[in-house]
Length: 267
Image (cartoon, rainbow, N blue to C red; front, side, top):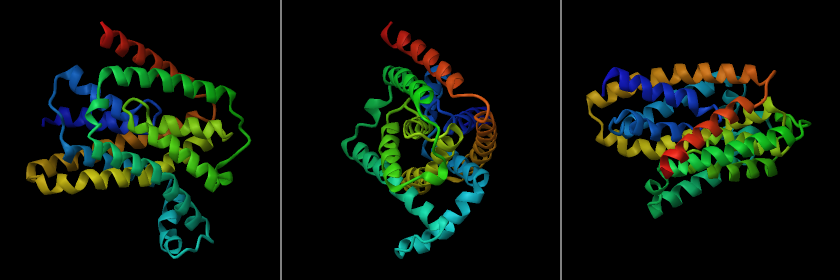
């Protein structure tokens, strides 16, 4: 892969992983637009690592205590904020792990990677985000996150396995539907991405590392840096902007892109 190819793939992944516009949908579209070959699993794992590092560093005040609370959580003690957060994040991740394994077992993943599917999911879930963002209450904060809400948001997150849905978009929609303020819904969505990225990265990483050569690992290391920088910028901008604006700009982008893709798919 050329450096430019690596930069585009990693930057697109980094910018779109946490914005509610679907990173998987954009990564699937890049080969169609640029006529590039698939980047391969090593690069997929690398960009996931880059975005994971970005979200952990940005939300380190919550993420690090959660990591530290894992041993207490595993022994049945959720008596600290970190252990409680680790427990809720684990519960929220179970549905997407189960759904992901079912997709792999049934070999349905490739069936969903089409412009038509991405176009419809961009459009439908963009409109859903707009509706819940405008109609949802704003009386809950991140401290109100409960086991029930973690399960519900986890179930919504599993839908994001359909390309074009957007993991962050669907979980933010769930948070807004449950009454969380915009900034808090986004923060919970970002924290939920940590175990999800770890799970998907582990699933992809086992085979990728076995098949990787030195050139592939070097390209992967470069992709980590690019994805990390792009993700950190995207996170910082979105979380700051959410204090003063709604999700409407992202919705407009999703609707326009969805309509364009559907026109292409059906023409």
